[in-house]
Length: 222
Image (tube, rainbow, N blue to C red; front, side, top):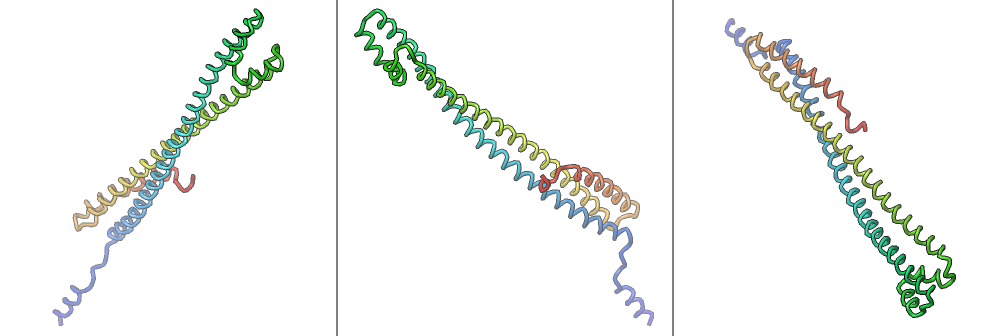
């Protein structure tokens, strides 16, 4: 009878201690927080990648506009200088009465200036207006290129911020992993004092990690 009683007692499941329950709860909480931190880190990583990619795309587009406008500006300045020189030669020969040379230089002028001089040799106001409008158009494109570069800078800054936030969440993930390590040690059947020490260390790191995590901007709240 005594043997049956002893056998029944030995077969009964051992009741978990309060410390073991606390360790189990902390393991669950830490695992969830670690997974959440890793998820946020991944989201910030995606945001960083999108921002960097958009920044490069916008920069390339802005550079293309800038180079095209700069090429047009150089051509405009060369043609304008050429017109000024040829116009001076045409005017000089016209005033001297050298019709042949004047006619030669006239053919070398730009079509717009030729049209203006044909209508009134002393009035080139329409030509000047066309030149001013063309220059304004080129300068507007250069300004657009500057705006694109500014936008690219904003996107790059946004990407850098996302990268920093992602790194911060990664650090929290590592810290939560350290907590799991100490809780794993505490779950072993070791000396009671050592178990409590491991739990205390785990709780301290867990609290500090949680406080650090909640101070980082969450990607889905931006």
